[in-house]
Image (cartoon, rainbow, N blue to C red; front, side, top):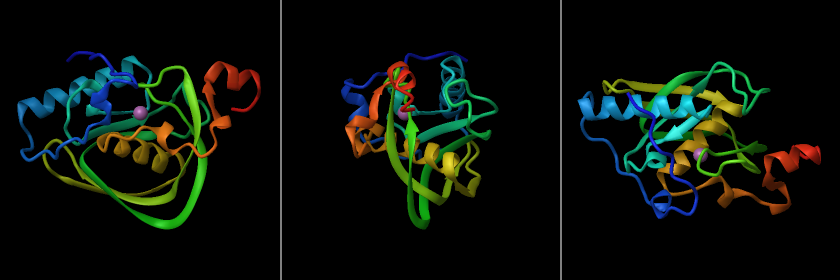
Length: 174
Ligand code: NI
C-alpha cells in the first residue's frame, strides 16, 4: 500500500485514453486499487482515476463519508469501478462546482447529467450497476471523463465561473 504522486494538469498523460482491464483479480490490479485508495484518502479527495497516478487503465474509485473539500455533499459509499460505463436516465443537466486533485486549489462550475445508471466491475470481476443522481452522478461523470483524457475545465461553459477556491469563497461565488 502506498500513496502515489498525482499528475497535474499540463502533464500530457492526463490527455491520453485509458485502456480496458481484461484480467480481473490479479495482484497488479489489487495493488493498483489499494494505491489509488491510499492516494485519494491521503489527499482528501472524493474520487480518483488510475490515469491521475500515471496508469492508463480504465479504473476509477470514488466515495467518502465526510469530505472537507465538499462539506455539504452527502456521503457516497466507497466504490471501485473497472471498465465503467453509464446510461443517461434523464436528459436534464445540472450545473455544480467541481474540483480535481490534478488541478489543486481551483474550482469550476460544470454541467452534468443529473440522473444516470452506471455500471462497471469490481476487482473480482463482479458487475456493479447503480442508479444515482446529483453529486454521486457528478462524481462518476467527472472520474469517467479522466479515462478519456478529459478534465472538468474542458466542460466549463462560462469561465467567469472558474477560479481559485479561496477567491471564489471570498467573493461568495462558490
Ligand atoms: Ni479529477
